[in-house]
Length: 133
Image (cartoon, one colour):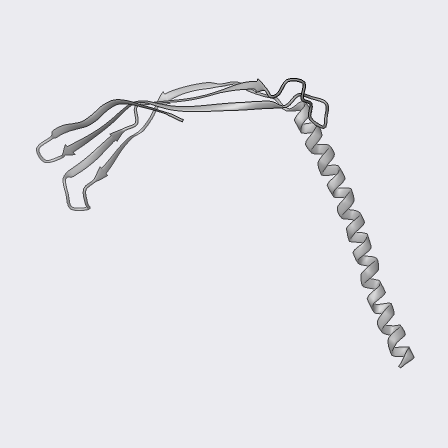
């Protein structure tokens, strides 16, 4: 009975040693990941942009057999951002002030219309609507 308990205890202790080694390795990996994240935040390039492009025209048929459709012209898509320092006198863990990236998405000159492909009739439902997010 005593021999069985010694063998069992030796077997379980091997798992404890392995668990301790895995825990130590995990701590080292976490420290390195934290250091890498801090390096990235201090060396990261911040870019301000303003992009404008023609947004797509989407044609949605009434059904698979119909020649009637809804036409959605999304007009002009503009995406822009602005960088702004957050909070007066606040500092992050690395000693730098936090930076906010404020992004805006605009859809200008939206048009929604009804269209018949057999008679080529175009019925404007609404036009020149603007959407800003």
